Image 1 (cartoon, rainbow over the protein chains, first blue to last red):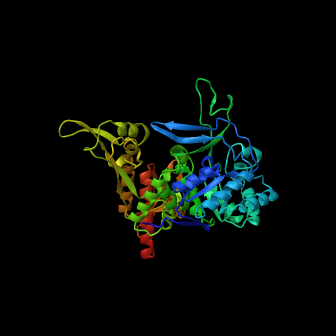
Image 2 (image 1 turned 30 degrees about the vertical axis):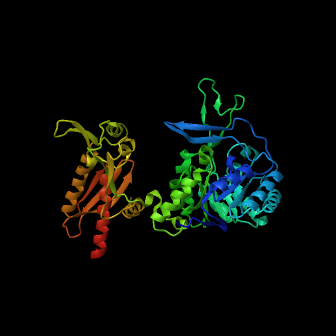
Image 3 (image 1 turned 90 degrees about the vertical axis):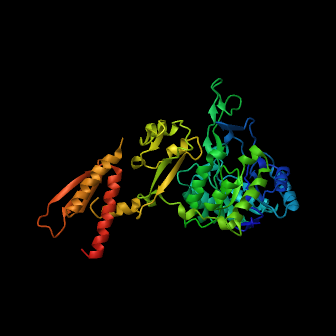
Length: 420
Length: 79
């Protein structure tokens, strides 16, 4: 039985699975049910000056046979008074003292506003604070959320203000709606953040109804941009976590968020540098009990890898994530078609002809049947054929390692010595 | 189509020059590819130089590997 306990910037949790701030952490009733299901922690739905939310708030992107491949929301922060939330936080912490409760906070970028809410929320007994500099909709129009999270100076200053008043660890939640997330992550670290979390949701418009021409979702026929999340955003989130994790100038723990819906996703985020993961959309789609499989799966994985603690996973893949210019130009992979598994659908041939390097060609086998093979010397190893192939095992990519490596950066340095 | 043939042709030009005691002295890369100037090694009687225009990515990769090998050899021989 592996040790799944984590210590995240001083916040202890019996496992790395936290509910992210959002609809599933709106009330004490929900958070307590989540803790009963096995979640190690919860980030309470963002507290701030109460708002009024619209109805028709969510929309899901169904792609192929998968429901909720992506998810969009235009719901704002809590619409309940602070006192009500704090009473429920107190009660939840009293009933579940070994679970981590982190309060997500969002106020105007004013020092006194941060001081006030930090003190009042900490008085309720939270284990940590998460500054919401990420929500891209609604609150951003009022200068909060991603509007302030896109300006490194504001991130640093507001983090500093929160830290002036805070006695518990301060996590800064970053927006992905920015060109380089390491700029704001660095600003958070400079402001004194104890940790960062990413990603918040991505600017999105889910769709347009082709009959009514209304946006999806819409409020009385009118729409607005929302925040996109769910499995579709996982690669974006993973990349941003990795970019921050490899920066020595950002020497603080990372909580990974974005499309995590099973233990495999969680393990990937941890390997890329996250020491806790937060989940929202998957809990909204499947319910709190998905955490049971997550815990079992991660436990088995850590055991199988011969590790004592889940913390031993953290960051193991970060040294393998480089800038493009440091990849080996001499290394080659080529596609190989396994005739025993090929179903002769020709999708690889079409893909290669139309969108790649025209190196999959027909031949007639010994029994007189038409089949496909790869002309290896022209294969650039793009993987497209194996991606589009519907027959498991029919196309494998074979490594053809070179004896010496040569990166683009090494090459350019060498060329520059010869006048290039 | 069959870009490998272009690579083989460009590689052949470089290899022939290498076999004739040429070495790379200058590389200019621009939108049109790489222009690789090769010159006979020092002990040759003349200072004939030849410029090869490389178009294919594989040939440009190959040329740089040749360059690395040449530098390694030079550092080992002190030349």
